Length: 320
Image (cartoon, rainbow, N blue to C red; front, side, top):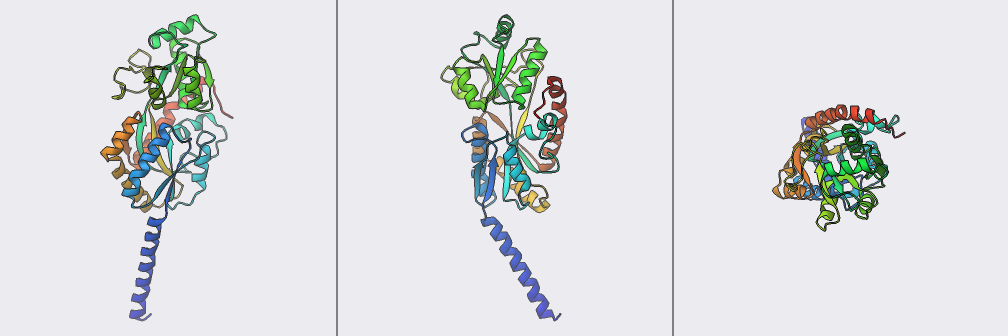
């Protein structure tokens, strides 16, 4: 090949590569959320998308795809091209809990997704409605012993961390509690405020908003330490009940993403989560900003998978 032709060929390839990158930057990133609009996870996704648009220099569009406890959205991610244009913000349940409860899970939580980084950690809370007695968790447990037919805890559905936290609460205190699952946290909270169930175990933000009107009371949280947004609310461990259940929100992509795409998105995610504005918004959603790299998220996921094995096995619950 003549030297001039070779140089021209290289220049053409370089130009094509540059055009491809430019085109990628113009194509919108779809950020899927496996929950309905309006909750704390959806709010976090939209706040994150605002920052990723800047750090990626690329449009980012949030799409709610609720159904089958995030599995519909995760299924779409699994089938998507590994081009970095389809991502999901998911909590830890599909990766640390579902493998223990589904005998035929439609995805492999390790092989079928690419971890891109953790965004935040969060705790759940135990909230009481008008059916519960005055006081805190000890008073509720004493009441539950005396009213076994009414002793129950509501959650937003079976097979989630709230379900197993309630089961652990029952087993570790020796107080039988019936699980009442609902199709989402909103209907469960409505039933709590209406006096149909005495307590609810769920994410904090939704209960926090209703607690401001006095319709519900937040009795305890499930974290390692008290939250700055709820300084007067004790953890279960503070109350002498050895239960902690840290959870997280992480960003994932399809399987097979190239290392350069992983690094680009992870770098943008790190930059976004360092924003004081985003950190304030995450705190206002009753979460804690906590960036972790893709490798660190893999380790956190593996630790969570081991952590949930014993309590789920003890519960005897299977989803199939």
